[in-house]
Length: 244
Image (cartoon, rainbow, N blue to C red; front, top):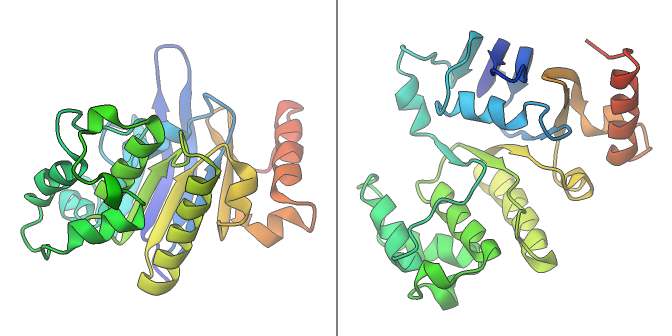
């Protein structure tokens, strides 16, 4: 099966020496792919390059079979994302914010806004100004915006940031439902490894800008749990005994 997202030898270096180097990664249709690593390991850099927010220094990215400069922007129409922070318009209502975004997708049915607000639990607050929302509520609204146009691939950077326990469980259930019912593919970066173990089909571990291990969750955990598998890989990486 052709990957939805294919990354080969991806490299990006910042002035401080951090970044990513030599990343090879495939996200297949229907995957819920979890990307894990310490702070500064390059997770957000990878997501930003994929979504066109920054340019790579080297390597290639293919999204739905298209590369930058070869119809990549058309492939991005099939992508929804929340990267780093929940960027929302504070002076608008939740409903108004989504109506503004919906103008870029004229094919959407009018009922779609209400549907995604219901998915993220914001229906009771749909007419409230966003400036009064908590961080978790803003995160829910950003998630609703990313799902508005029924994307085939959803990229989420720390999606449970600011969510309470109930919100985190609801997020997990929503991702699982969209994956099962709609075949939506997900690429998720998170530190909530226990939660992601319940969610992900495949995972990749990043350390110091390199992808040191990836695979299906059962293969990597070997009955030990994802947290223990991750910690073991980090110890190997720090000792210089990485899987490459």
